Length: 594
Image (cartoon, rainbow, N blue to C red; front, top):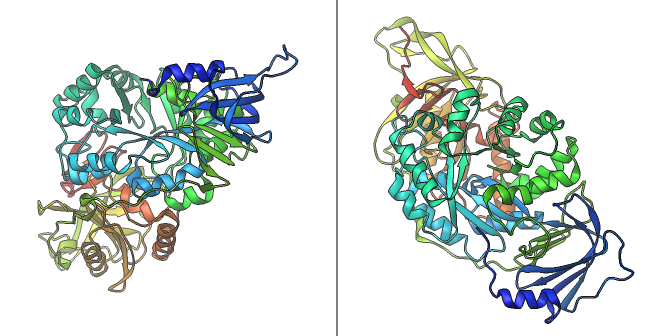
């Protein structure tokens, strides 16, 4: 696809000098993502596109020609870099609305984002995707949207608020800025040719749209089968060897630097001996407001890649032209004639903080500040209470058994580390007290309960080890990807208090201690997002993180630890509203082990 030019004849006339440029950026050092060169250049912009670059990198002429312009900007020798592209993210995971998200990331130089709204799609279905499309209109950023491919992530293993089939995706692909299919998480369904995935992928292939992948730890024939089915990129490479294997197979690796998973260092360290592969890009996936405000967005991922030893211009290519090429957008991602005028002026490439940000030919940010006004709008979808859950009792957080005393063997979800979302099952003998399982003897062993919040009335219960809680409880409606109400607790009393706080706030994340609400992060928009702008929301999130750390979870991101336990597409032991899930086998397994 190509981003359309409003008037190509006039653009040609501006290029040839028959009409003045709207903006001329003088005295820059152009980073050429095609050749890897950096040289002095002036840039002419006309109606949102680059019309001409005046430069003489080979010193073949004595003087450069001056371009006539309506406005002149002195680049002061700063580096002219294409606007940065985030190839995979979920706006909902920032807990910001689309408008507030744009306000946060644009000053850091992100001018194009590829968003998959499957988080809110799981909650409110097609209406939610249409809302995200409408709410991202007329913003100072290019927001392309993908039609969620896996709602729910794995049928039969969880219940969400909606089910998307091929007909639903066909409808969404007709929306103006929907350019492809969102991350195909049901990798077992793909490689085993499930009816749902076959129909969805055939639709995407027929329409010749971009297909985004999700294939954690797939390798060998399974990975070949996945690629043959259609998805040809992946943001789930957590280990260097995994990234090397996927790059070798022609897969685009979206190296991720999110608030939960920092994979850029491992991936870059593992592939530095490769000769500038064209199939590597950068993405943020799930990045919180505080991390964006303090460290940056995709510019931070580029900086991390450079610090890890990647060539500077190649790191920039990963976030610009290579990203555009992977998406199939032909006139995005470079500072060159005919390309969109998404341009950054950066004083120091090692720091990657832009002084000027141009998007669609307009100066939209300067000195880390947004220059354009974004109109505040409200939408009916934002007012829907999505927590449809009957009031629980303490009994809902207990596991009753037939025996009055003794021990019973059960499957326990075991986190591999405090900073990882990877899990495995361990069979443990749990003592029985008065006809119930008793975890009071072990402060590392917690109760976990998932309540369906979409009116189905069901729940499942299990035990989890190495989650981090030593006391109290954490509950939340941010629970990837079906976003049911999930609670992890050391005791039933605090579990009940935490869940009731979530019900009362119409969604969010809460924690409780000694029978009282310790803190709460209200997320009333689909139980996922806040109406607050980034800086105000970050204050609430920062306070909430400290409260959660006080319960024992002292890791890089204590807030979203609760969001990782119910996702049945990240290995290997998870729990949904239907029960315990073996991710590798893609089947429900029993809690009790005979």
